[in-house]
Length: 347
Image (cartoon, rainbow, N blue to C red; front, side, top):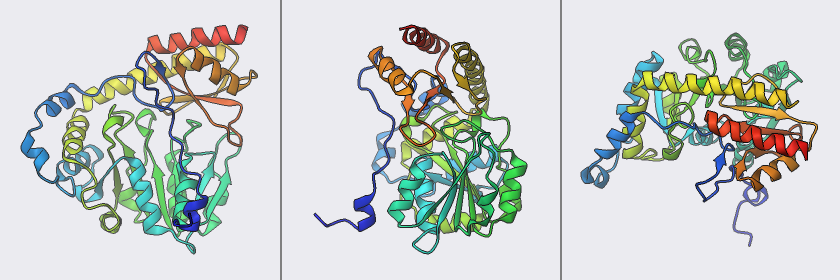
């Protein structure tokens, strides 16, 4: 048709994990938390009034900003609400990148980054991880306006230590965005860096540890000057009234959150051990998923699991074609997966 900009025409677009319509499936393909959100969330949801829906929401989501600031030991003006972590990524590309201002990130990583680079018409400098998924030293010398490190990394589940991220932030001239969508399941995080660096943005998601993937809510942590700049490129009312209320209730219930996270960690370890017993190669994961490699073709395992109503994630991408990313489910879900894998591998 010729209506779209050239870079939009050539963009492949991001491909989310398959969302099966039937409910009698074991869904381990999109890294959702297998446990329900805090009971406080459901209570707040039940108390939403028609008047609250009739009015526009608080454009800044200040109720949530105050609650998130307390949890992260910063002031509220260090926090910005987002319509999922993906919106923050989109805002960062629009704010910092163009044809003369590239983005850089290690690969393999979250497959949305190159899509956003194409749409923004900026160069994407992709620096390969080594076999141990260590932070590539070459990231420092790219001259990129925006550097992104997904930590824990998707889809590998690997983690770069906070001291290494600190050194990277210190050496970069541009902005460093640390995508901590999965950090709830790690042992440490980079939130404290925003106190010492004016070029660091931390991305957080309410989808994983807080079991709120369905409401699309995330947030940024950064120096107020960076937050103020990002505010210029956000939608007027980018988070809705229900999402603000629900996310606030969730982040305030830290006891429930921590108990939920510990359950996922326990099941992650159990699932890792069971997969290794089936001769899968599984590196230690710091997220709510594992990346498993088998000598049996990964694409065939993926298809045969679907035949059994079990969904995991397969990426037909360089370096990932022989692996499956498996979300940590409940004990029952994981056991059904292992049982199915035993059948498949013995065929």
